[in-house]
Image (cartoon, rainbow, N blue to C red; front, side):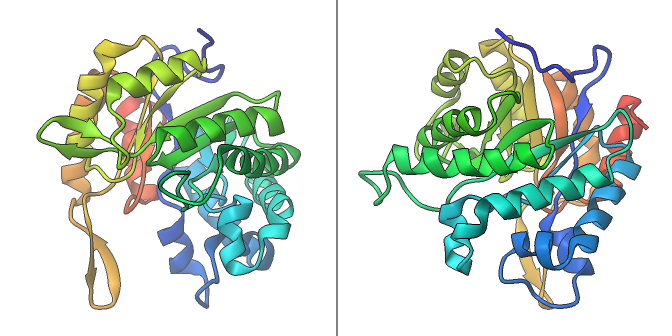
Length: 293
């Protein structure tokens, strides 16, 4: 089993937090999709990356969560997917301090594979390959596949990323819901099934992000750790989102979120960070907690 080459031996590797909410706080006008900021408002994207690096993140993720051609088609930008991804990676690289890294982020297409939807695995894989090619061209250090609700799509992304960026490590995270029977993706993929698939794909690290609060994520990692020796990734939401006075707020405050991070690490998470609702302040506090500040 390969090992993620950037993993510090004495502490967890620290990723960044949310990108979209930070961009919305900076940009003067609503965007067609967040990825257009890589072309139209590069200074805003750079500012978010700088804030996360200054907070102590070992790596920041490119502004390309919706950067696959299939996802960008909704904004009329499918044909510019490689350009947009390369631009995003260059922006992150341009503000990367020495000894830090850039994760080329790949998110879900928002579509379903057959028979639930219209798309085939080959179509998904080709789109992810093009996205990864752009991220590699822009200088990303590794590929981070995130927020996949279908294990099949995640594996398409792994194959596509390796095809488009053959020299880069590829990591993957799924998003899980908590139910009476434990943790499962929207498509019913459980921890044991995901472990077997990701280990068979020889991923150097894998795990979960989004959906769950830090407490639920700590419980998930504790349940997952006995199933694998591969480093686990955990990026929790700041609780559940809600709309208040026209803005999105999250149910888990900063102190409550941070209170669960020691248990998350003790349970086996080796790569940590934040997801929706988290800010550079969350990452700063995590950095101090793990000795990365």
